[in-house]
Image (cartoon, helix red, strand yellow):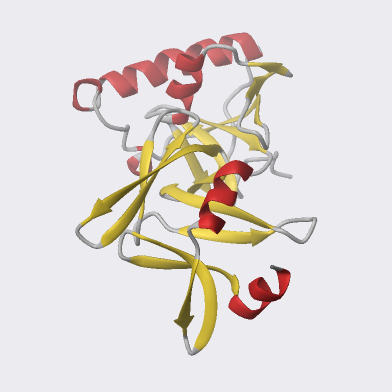
Length: 213
C-alpha cells in the first residue's frame, strides 16, 4: 500500500532521519531558488518530476502556521523558502526540488491572505491580497476568489495563488469583501458578490443575502 502523499507506482527512496532529510531539503531548495533567474521569481516546480522520497513530518495548520515535528517553524525566511517549492498533485501537497519530492500535510489551504488593498485599474477596481509569506496576488480572472460553505453555515473565501495552490482569506478581510459587495445577474440569477480586475466573484444568492440582512 502506498504511503500518505505517495501516488500509485511511486517508490520512496530509502528513509533517513528526519533532521537529515530536512537539512538536505533546505539546501536543495536554496540551490533551486538561487538558480532561478538569479534568485528572482519562483522556481519552476511544475517542470520538475523527481522521485518521491517519502513523507516529511511537516504540517501547515489551518491558520497558516508551519510545523515541523510538532513544533512551529519560527523562522519566516525558512517558511518563505519552503513555500516557493510547494506543489499540489492529486489533492496532496509536496515540497519539490529538482532531485526529490517529499509529502507534507496541509490542514486546509497552504496560504493565508492577510492583507488587502484596493486600487483603480484599467478595468475598474482591482483588489490585491498579501499572503502570509509576503506574496502579493491580484484578484482577477487568473487569480479567482471562491467561496466555500463553512461548517457553521457561513462562507469562507479562498484566493487562487498559483497552479493548484490557494490562500484562505482571513475573517476580517471577508467582512471587508462583504462591505464592498454588490448585486449582479449571473446566468439569469441575481447574485451577491464582489468585483475585481474585470471579473465578478459571486458569494451567494442575492435574495438569501437580503433576507439575512
